[in-house]
Length: 272
Image 1: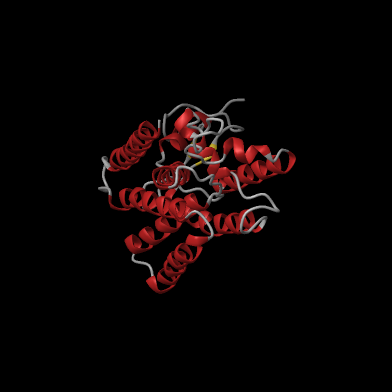
Image 2: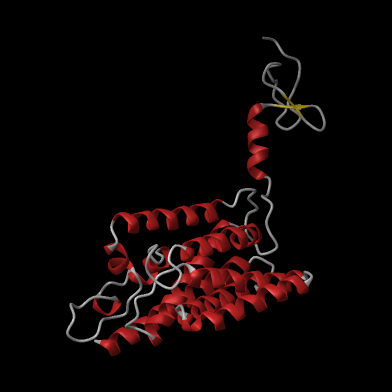
């Protein structure tokens, strides 16, 4: 088909069926694609890519639910993958101190069986409700990659503090990671200059629950997650807003990961 229309970008003739209307004139399909690739993607205030769907939060909830279903089918999953430093002398050796390092993370995806523990099935219901409510907000502010790093480091921070203080306790639950998200919510609100009345009430309730639940649940896991989440989010919030931002944020996450692993290794060495 003969055409007398030129692309306003590359000046080549365009097939009338293929040309795309531009702000001025028309462009060919190739130039439209090239222009789309060169457009900078919108970023959040903390450097993450903006996403309309909190996909990571949905995936995390799904993983927790699947793990819980596995517990119902095979209750031994809790003892096999829950966070455990070591067992007293005279028992079959198991736990992180005996090479089962995966427990530092797998325990954060398990919860109390329906008829066991202090809360039973309420354990996973309360944690997933909290993850649904606060996770979507934090993920929307941080972007998916930073949010996932925050969640996993908070979970790891909780497990490491359990290992350091209560190595003989078998601990399960996403509470450490969720406390880390709570710390992130508070730090981000302060950095963005939000109305702190609601945020302070939320944080006060979180700390109150930390105290009340100390005798019922693993306060070490809660506190470890809170501290790790706070450190990570401080790096996210106050890193320089230039080309160094991503490098500083990633550096703090890697540094915290290294610190937690060194602490865990030192404790394991002492236990063995």
